[in-house]
Length: 182
Image (cartoon, rainbow, N blue to C red; front, side):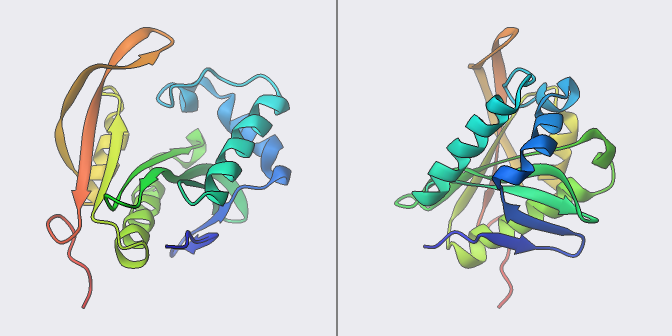
């Protein structure tokens, strides 16, 4: 399967990240409110942002992941994508983050809906997963609005700045949680 370089929704355009996006990405990834649920420390340099974009680009080239810049009203407001794709098992993990000024406007729900549609309709995946810190209530709500169900809590699953943290596992199953148009 070929990963799309771009996805379009009613209000958003999801485009592969580019080097010219680095200043905006540094602003995004240096905001402690944005990064507190990302399991990264806030970035301090353009070099750190470049390393992250280079990792995303390398994974995209190998068709194992893709990270899109989220464009709204001609502004880059966040990133989203497939963090890991297992083609043999037809499943993927998604992730996303938005700048604080874009919170509470339904954009998270819209971008996840686009990823779900792409995963099931174009990539022919069977299962989509999302790992969410229990404190990240807004992200859990976005997932539930898109047919995801909480499968359980993985105890001490991820090491964060504060130590080991529990993670809630959400999933959406093709044909079970989401019905595709005929």
